[in-house]
Length: 247
Image 1 (cartoon, rainbow, N blue to C red):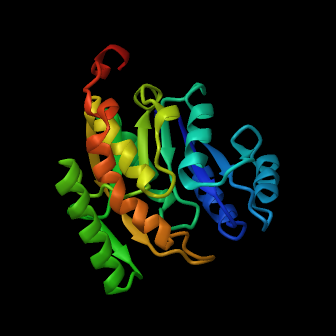
Image 2 (cartoon, rainbow, N blue to C red):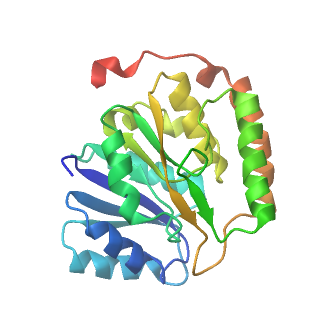
């Protein structure tokens, strides 16, 4: 790959998955990893530090303190990452549901987009090992989000994404209010309102192999409320200056 990339991975109790994921990412030249560990009691951060010694200069970890949360982990990681000398900043889940082999396709697509989403819901995209009720819930959630927010992306809830660094740096990360997985929707909504060019690349999403899902009832409730909060928030409704000056 001609572009350099830093992959931000939030973790909580992922010590079994993180070595496999990092190994897959290290197969790509020009790719570095930043793990943001949310006080995992299973020692995920220590495992990642060991990986950093195996891949010097390519694997780093942030040990978070204070209030835990998916969105908070990403904000901490992104605020550090936007200052790094790389072309592209990427988001991935730690549970091996996102295939590292597909990362070059997302990175390459940033040549013509500010944000590239690894999409399950465009031609060529797929989901493996999900029960039908989970597939229906995800489809309904995306239809609901698009209906409320008027976002054009087919997969608004995908966590597999790549950003041009300047585009991510332009977002008001310190003003985001979502904490759970609806943080992904908030990021997409704000990016769209600020004129970011958004593209989708098909991916195959595979259900986690190890550990437990972090989706709780509270996460689902937040996800249902967030689209309405976004359209009611005047800060995000104002279209800011386009990113042409920093591309």
